[in-house]
Every structure is written in C-alpha cells, then in structure tokens.
Image (tube, rainbow, N blue to C red; front, top):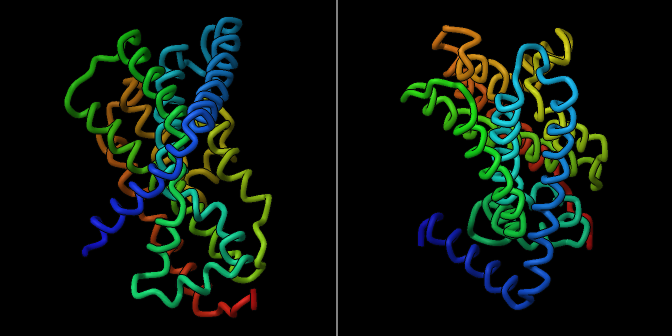
Length: 261
C-alpha cells in the first residue's frame, strides 16, 4: 500500500470517528464558521468607516483575507497533529510511532485530521467568490494561476511553521505558546495586505518568515498595483521555507530521547 492509499485509509477512519457524534461535529463546524464570520464583520465595519486602507478597497481586502484564510485552514486541517505534537510526545504515542514501518513524520500527520475546520473553509470560499464577483479586477489566466500559487504557497508556509513548532518539542517536550503569534497571529495579520503594517514588518515577513511572498507581492500583481509578472511567482519561492523546517525536524529527531511515558 502506497502513502496516498494509506492516507486515504486514515482519512476515512477519522471521518467515521467524527460521524459517530454527528451533532458534536456539526456544532463544532458551525462554531468554526461563526468565528471566521466574526473576523469578516471586523473587516466590514473597519472598511465601512475608512473605505480603503493604503489604496486597497474593501473588495480587494476581502479577497486578500479569503485567500490567506483558505491557505491557513487547509494547513491546519491536514497538519493539525504538528500543532499538538507536544501531546503526542508527552503521552508516549510518538515512541510507538517510531516502531512502525512507515516514516514517523507521515505517521504523525495521519494521526490527526481536523475535519471540523471545514466550517472555516466554507466561510473563506464564500468570501472569495463574493470578492471575485464584486471587485473590479480584470481576471485572466495569469491572475487566476497566481491565486492558486498564493494558496499553495500559504499552505506550505503555515505547514513549515507547524513543523518547526513540532521540532522544538523534541527539545522542550512542551509546546511554546509564543509560536501561536506566528500561526494565529499570521491569520489575523493576513486580513490585510502585509505591506500596510510598515517597512519593518514587511521586511521580516519577506526574508525571515515569508508571509509576504505568498500574500502581499502576488496580491499587488492580482490587483494591478504592479505590472511585474514575476510577483505572481513569488509564492513558489515561499514553498522553499519547507526545506529548513524539514532539516530542523531531522535534527530534532536525531536528538530525541524517549520521555519514558
């Protein structure tokens, strides 16, 4: 059985498990929808008061936020186990995973698939469809492809952050709360194009943690604020952030000692 077939098996197992408590699943999914809807209201009231931010209109900001939210939600749905890796280490489950014939990182990823996040994903898709239909952007194949690159790059960046978070747990055996600033904080900052926060934040989000590579620069190209088509390819560069994250995981794994649980 190859990895794709095995992941499908895990997916069905998680789905069947959640369907054993259908009401709980539906209520949790609805809760995720309402949480993101509350964020949407924050943008609505902000833009109703100021009409535009740094030259970006309400529809453009809604488009930017929906793309960021989709990327974040997909990453959290598929790679949620990395965000809760300290629990997997603490209860001794990771020691058992090391004895299995499959790659331990693959096994960790398959151990938890957060399907309730579909509520947030639905909210993001609805906002995206509205923003696309209501904005004055002249869509073509290049801009549509850039959107796909942005979502893919965003998933890669958030996944890399989760992987770094999990790797730190090899040394601390506990999750570090400040990492939530980078994950949940990025989702909050992602409501608006990164460039509006100033040059210092833009520099950090370009060269240190590449949020701007999948969000701000390609978004400038989509909205016509730059004619440089290379901006539309920046999200591909952001995927390279997975490389140091994977190396850090391998380094942490090589230094790991059992917790004795």
